[in-house]
Image 1 (cartoon, rainbow, N blue to C red):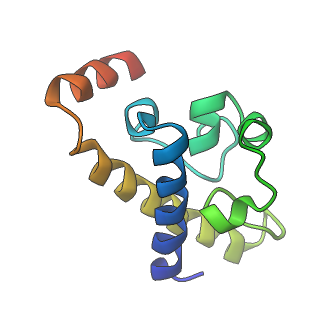
Image 2 (cartoon, helix red, strand yellow; image 1 turned 30 degrees about the vertical axis):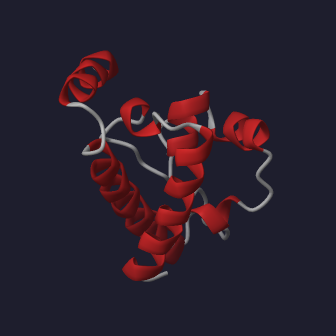
Length: 112
């Protein structure tokens, strides 16, 4: 997966969350990491990746940039997760600019 593909997948996932959880950028911390169950976007919103999958009824999380299929120890899969994580962090920052500054500050304090 190249960086452009990762950006597209994260964009689709972020657009999806914009509909389901409009305040998601306020609830997902800057250290979001798509590779890890509890601190991926779904883990931050629902407690774990699995609970998020269940809650949202997602069958193909890879199409929304929430998951990379393959051997999770494979360097190519790890690299794909790193690219997805960077893309998700970009999407989060882009969307935070749509909120009032007070909301962003309150959310940042709550995430500490």
